[in-house]
Every structure is written in C-alpha cells, then in structure tokens.
Length: 386
Image (tube, rainbow, N blue to C red; front, top):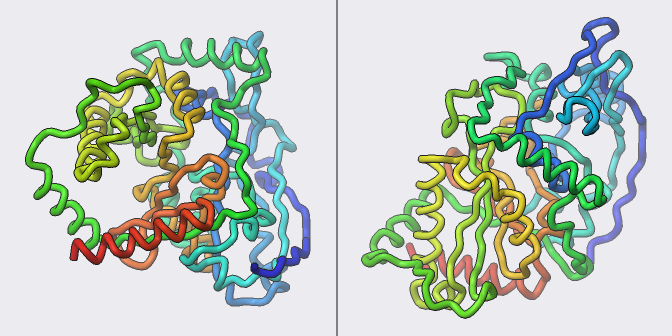
C-alpha cells in the first residue's frame, strides 16, 4: 500500500476578470447545456511537470492565473424567471482557486500501472474541459484561443425538435423532487479498487480494425429471442456535435455533444464472436449519429437513467478527439490526465495518446482482482493479433 501524501496549502485565492474589464453578462443555456445539469460534474486531474521552485510558481506564475473572465458567473435556476437557466456574471463574481503542494510521488501518480484509487482523491477538483483549455491559452502558444476567441453565440445551436422544452420540464420536475442527478453515483467500495491506464497505439488500432473486418463475414448483433431486459448489455457514450450539427464554430464555448447507447445481447457478447458483435453494434450506432445526432434525443434522460441503474453496462467518459494533452499553461503539456469520475460510475475513460500522434489511453478503475484479469487478457490479446 502506498504511503499517505501530505498536502500543504499555500494560498486560497480567487480567479476573476481584471478590475473594470468585463460588463455584467448573461449567457442563456441551450438545450445541449441543460442536459448536463442532470449529471455529476467531471473530475479530471491534469498532472504537469514544473521545473522551477514553489516560490517561483507563487511569485511569477500564479499572478497570471488569477485573472480570467470566461464562465466566472453563477448558474441561475429559476422557473419563475423566463423558465430558462442561465449563467449570469456581475462585478465581483469569481471562482475559488486553491494552491497546494503535495508530498506525493509524481512519477507514481503519473504512471500507467495499477495504483490504489484513494491516492488521488485529495487532489480532485471540479472543472470543465473547455474552461481549462481557455484558461491555459494566454500562458502559452495554445491553439485554443490564439487562433480565435471563444464563440458565445447561442443561436448557432438550433432546436428544431423542441428539445429545450422537454429538458426544462424534466429539470423543474427533478428539482422540485430534489432528485436532480440522474443515476446517482454507485455506492462502491473504493478500498480495494485500483486505477490503471492501457495504451493502445495507432498500429494496435489498425491491427484490431483489420482483424474485425476479416472476421466479420456475416451480420451480427441480433435482438430477437432474449428473455428479459437483463439479457441486454448497454454501451453508452457521447458524440461530438461540432461536425454533426449545422455548422458550429470550432471555437464555440459551450456543450455541443449528443448521447446514445448501443445494445447487445449478453450471450452473444460472451460467445466466440463477441468482439465482432460489439464492434458491429457500436459501429452501427456511430453511423446513425453521423446521419442524425439528435435522433431520439427526447429520450436521452430516461435512457441514461436506465443505463446508470443497471449493473451490467459500460459507460465511456471523455474522447480522444478533445486533445486535452495540448492544454499548456506555459510550462509544457500535461504529463498525465486522469478522470476520477470513473471510480464511482463504473466507466471507462478515453483520451488521446500523449506521446505520439494517434492511439488512445484507456483508463479503468475496477477492483484489484478484476484489474489483474483484464490486464492479462489485454496484453495477451494484443500479442495474439500481432
């Protein structure tokens, strides 16, 4: 068992716009923003190597991080105020920011091998991907804001299906019943859970793809003749909307993703062609999303509630297309990114591979015994395909 880390807090400060630099601002939430109010916040950890002393960080780097405007307002939820949630910024609004120094082993925490999940919890923040990338951009040659400023133009998100009304109705119903979050986090025993990262190179991915194509000679993934809902396994994920919706600027600052899930029969997944079944079901769902990402969106909340409540399911958090490893505050790219949210949600995290272009990093946090089995199967499986 790893020894406990000591955390020394150096400063509690506030991140806010420079004085008199930002007027009062109101930013309405779109229907794609509203859906995220039903879920627990993401909990990513970005690990950076900082080559200077602590005093250098506090005196030279920290002052540059204390002034930022984007999304520093308050979320206002009031059914009596135009019945629409919004983010409101007024002078004096800020975000709390703590600066602390850990005695933890940086090399250990940023490695890929299995580590006890509890080792990470004293570092956990609550944040958003685009907020972090935008906040970092003034400090380095970041591609996020150097080329274009954030786009806050909400009309670019068109609601031809009337989804805002559907989601708002669900929002106010859940708020009145004090059950805002869909599928509250599972009560899992973290004491025996470990976290590990499995790197899949672009060559590995191409090898797997060719194997699946070679094996997939006949249509797979049938839905007939199952006994009950418990015979079904679900694979839930999000899909980017920037390229699937009507033209949305790449610099759009807000949520622009859809939800969906693939469904397969459990006994077929356990069979000899289980991998082909899974690949076909996921591939077919992606093709559907490419054609119409908002198809079935009116059932997003109810579908995901079912998904979260099932013991047998797989959720995917993150995406290798977000390029989070390009988040540079001025002292280099992250050494490692971990998504702590997967611990309680039984999910799998995906990020792009840090070291080389192409490939992915797959994050898991199961009980130690399950991790040992998966690790062995993963390594041997890749060897067999070579």
